Length: 176
Image (cartoon, rainbow, N blue to C red; front, side, top):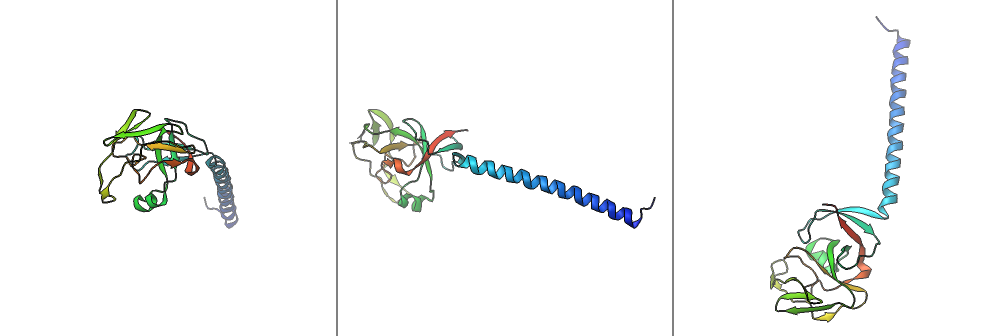
């Protein structure tokens, strides 16, 4: 069976109209997904952890939500740390809050008498001896952050120090 030229044009037009409908649906779906993403990203986003400083690899960051003691927090570290390490956002545990007492015995650091961890004496990254944070009472507006990994670069060291709550991005929840 041979189609006439008119029939071939009609079939081609029908196929093209079907494609345009599918293309229109795709654009609509993409627009809806982009809108949902933009709305949700104001409140939460996913973060992949690239270091071993804390357990887990994938986290939900609840933007603007204040963490409490023993929660995880994502924050912006001091600029010299960003330049040296290359990570503009860090995720650590909140191990000490305002009013808690930080002490150390030798290279072991404690918060309210609870052992946080042993501090390394020398950093290959910084090529220098690592000074411990001073014994102190944590002031209002600051927290002591720590990692679960023994080599975590955290508030045990003067280079990191206490973290200003103004640098918080949000509370983190480990997915896996």
